[in-house]
Image 1 (tube, rainbow, N blue to C red):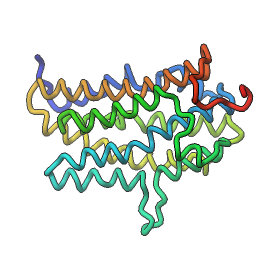
Image 2 (cartoon, rainbow, N blue to C red):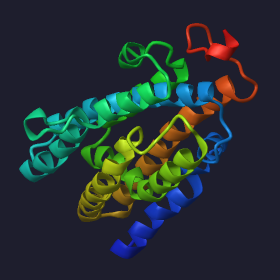
Image 3 (cartoon, rainbow, N blue to C red):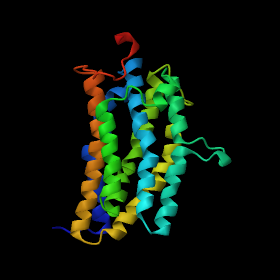
Image 4 (spheres, rainbow, N blue to C red):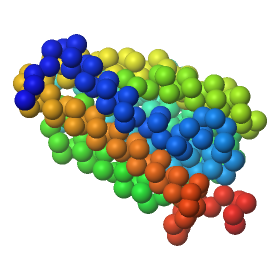
Length: 246
């Protein structure tokens, strides 16, 4: 089994994103290129909230597992990013996502309570939380490394959605503006951590498999959206139904 130098290791991680990141998914291309109708965008915003709301739970699970003060100190920033810091006047990423859901015409109470979320979305999100709770700490940290690939997709998403959807503006997409700063900070720390702690070929492979797993989690969510709301359009019982289909 090959042992990678730090530069080779980073390249191996980045190569996974080039092949498997969800920016390549057909649903994502439709979203960014303005090819979805309002109901399909609503379905995306609702289901993505399920993932966004789970991130602080996932990060809290990781923090609870480590005795490393530096890791806890750095990682808790992620929880604050999403849950907010009211003393600092920051409502947090979850509140900003609710604002996005309001902008696309969803009921905020339905979104907060995740009414109508696709079963496959829930299963994928909970699988991610279980992974972080149950696999090694190294793998748990590594699973966050998809953030390395996030800045490009965020810039593309913001530009594409503002230019093509008349019901979305800069204020509605405020969540993504904050992530352009947060994601590089978080991913650089996590990348340095796995480079320092994956000290043999077996551990490096665990890191790469964790990144692949996380890509699969993100991809599976878009598979579910495409199947339910694009083609063939099979919306499961209890899931969100756009108004035009009611």
